[in-house]
Amino acid sequence: MTWVTAIASVAAAQQASAAGKYNQAVQERNAKVKEQEAEQAEKQLDFDLARFDQQFVKLQGETKTAVLTSGAELSGSGLRILQYNAEQAEIEKNILDYNSKVEQSQKMEEANFARMSGQIAKNEARAAQIGYYAKAGESLLKAYG
Image (cartoon, rainbow, N blue to C red; front, side, top):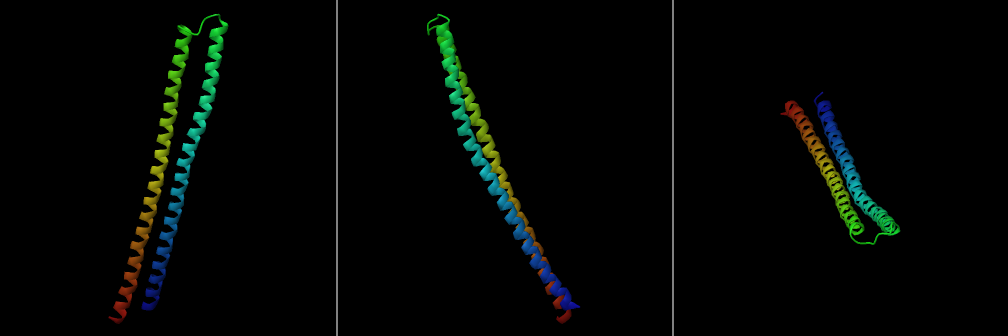
């Protein structure tokens, strides 16, 4: 009976170790996914800024055309409108950049958290493994000690 308990405890220790390694691997994969999402957010920012610039150039062109076809010169109010549009465009681009940086930061934090969770799972499994080995040793000591 003692050997059965010891063998079962050793098997449980090995299972705990395997489970811990598996859980850590899952969390590492989750971390990599979050890092990829952060990279994607950065690429999306580049795309959004390029698209925004295209739309802004179109808007400025339409504004110039509207001012000039109204018979006004491109000075005074017309120039102030173009200046205002340019200022608003910079603000909008800064907002896009800021939001992207926040998203990237959140994804990297999620990646770090996943890695920590994986390490905790591995450490918990290691503690369980040690407990099972101790139980096996205790069984053998009681029988033969």
